[in-house]
Amino acid sequence: MTHNSLITTSKAIAIISFVMGTVLFILQLNFIDSNSIFVFGFFFVLTAIAINAISLIALVYRLISQSFQKLELSEAIFIVLLNIPIAGLYFCILSNKL
Image (cartoon, rainbow, N blue to C red; front, side, top):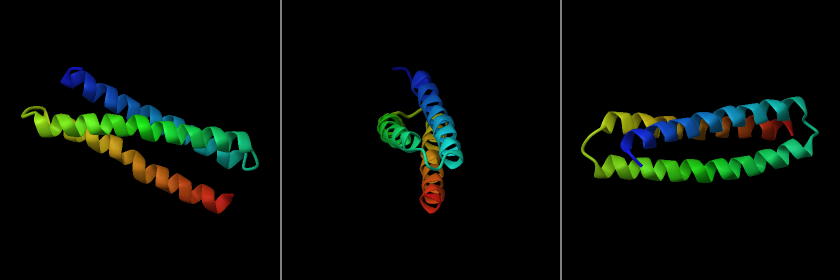
């Protein structure tokens, strides 16, 4: 995978994970008694963690091993890592609602 495609793919994965997670979060808030949304959301989170972790590992490896595109790689790493506090916030809000 080329450097630019890794960066673009990692950013896309992070943004798609954020959007899908936010949609599931809003659905769960609106349908608090729905176990099916909760179960689907749980498996989505597990899948998103795995995919984003693989992406993050590839980005960090490229950042350490390459001498160019440091800024772009760092930006992509930051975007991937932004999902962690957002997911934590969603979890705190939902755990207080359920």
